[in-house]
Image (cartoon, rainbow, N blue to C red; front, side):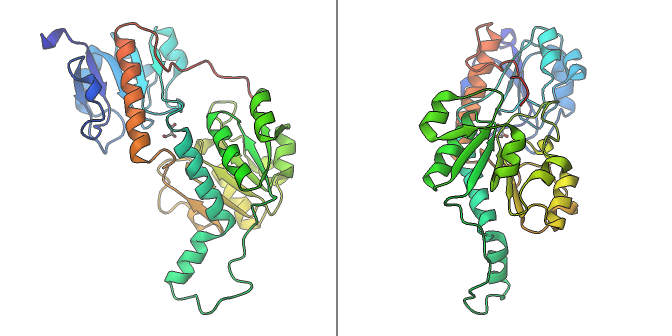
Length: 328
Ligand code: DGY
């Protein structure tokens, strides 16, 4: 009975119960929980695989697809799909699913956590307290930036950008966005003004990135873009690391071209401990934890399972990857 079930590669083992939906619906070959990429057993199974359930740590490109002639569906447990060669999949008739929506609120929360931490200099203040440098209450110690009345520039007013706008509005921030198209309903509801990216960079007190990584957005925030920002401005990135040029960011922070940054995503990932970015003033680096809550990660796994099962039987995916929007 079992050998007629389709074979699925689960590239990284997930906790007990997260993939229960696969039981009885497919055979699985499961990669090591801690090891990104395709290990030997996964590579060996590729020729027979009809589905792949992967994480953002696996590169699914033409070379992988060429080894998997029976593959029909790739389901990633992530909303971002920059690790997947969508053209190569389309050329082979392989459908691709992802997990939008379920991680929106968790990622927006983390964005606000970064924003607050950097604006109020929490890492420095906490480190100083712990290290015995809290000698008295100081009228000039650990001064940060007021969020109330500050302007937030959201680059990419999609689901997560909108959820951030909603939160920032409650903090009394003034909102603008730069996005491929207008969003009349959200703009009206939250009072967000659509402006060109150049204007957003020049006028925002905080710039927050919420757009997918593509050839159009790779190093969108480069030395030139950083130079147009206010010297008091903060940069927040919870989207993809390679949207920001890391060298340019390090230079901007060291020279005071901008006042601080909070980044949950980096180029490369993981960011090696000896990377120069860690030595930058007022920079908080997190290890890509935007969606890292128990509930959100379980929901992401469930959506990934639903996409995978639909793809295996040739049904429309509940959450197919849509063609990219026009650049900003
Ligand atoms: C995604 O889903 O793309 C996030 O970066 C990880 O949750």
